[in-house]
Length: 339
Image (cartoon, rainbow, N blue to C red; front, side, top):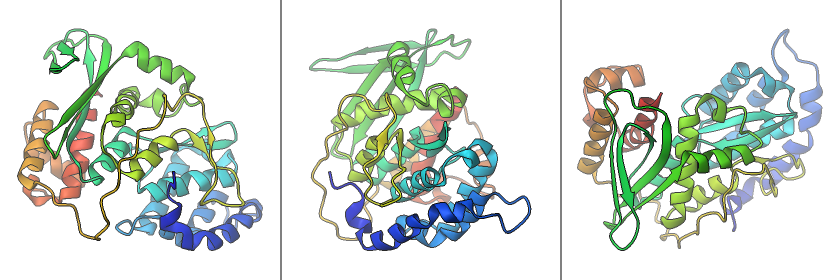
């Protein structure tokens, strides 16, 4: 698989030069008292971050997010600078923002940083393929009304209990494609836990702080094998749990895999549609209805107040948001109801 190299091949020489000087920069004394060396490094690397990012993303914002993550997770400052930068560049190339929103995580493991895409990040990339109309994942609890069957006429029904839902017993992901097709995948908690135990990051990071989101991500990865998704989505799956430490080439490095994050083979890559630099058409009405339904399922009764709180600004309703913002809300709202 060509991965992300074609889009960024022109920047390879500059990134190699940057990487070759990385250790010396990181080991140099901080210029200001108390300022983390890696925080300074992030600021200096903004031009390279900008070249790695998709065109619609801002390198200043990514640098601020990375600095915030560094301050919130002090153990990252004790990791090798090349592995931190490698994880940050991987997140940048995929267009995923690390941090509490759950698009991606930079997880310290020993003295290296592991890149882990989050549930919300995978859903974001799935929508960017332009072929998925809806994609959602839920955790099933023992007191929920839940039933499913595979075969020639597969069925899936889930009605969460309004009372005590009990302990989690399963997780599922379901997708509706724009061509009218649909797919779903169900995993037991035991299956999810088996994957978590095989992961080097299974006892820390998001597996420890947000099990629900990681369980959803796990089943989305399994469902993705049957969906016509983009190269970026497949790259995110392949790089899940990887550590990039080869400073000779931070663009086309062969990553080292953290065991257990990848189950079976990565999803098959479907032939890409011809690039025409035109945005993919979005069924606006269906998207708004999907968001409203997801908010209702999550127990949101005042949509305007919820959106205003989410964006830190006065939002009158879903019609005031962009398609991308609606897609991100659809990807993130369901996680909140699992707490």
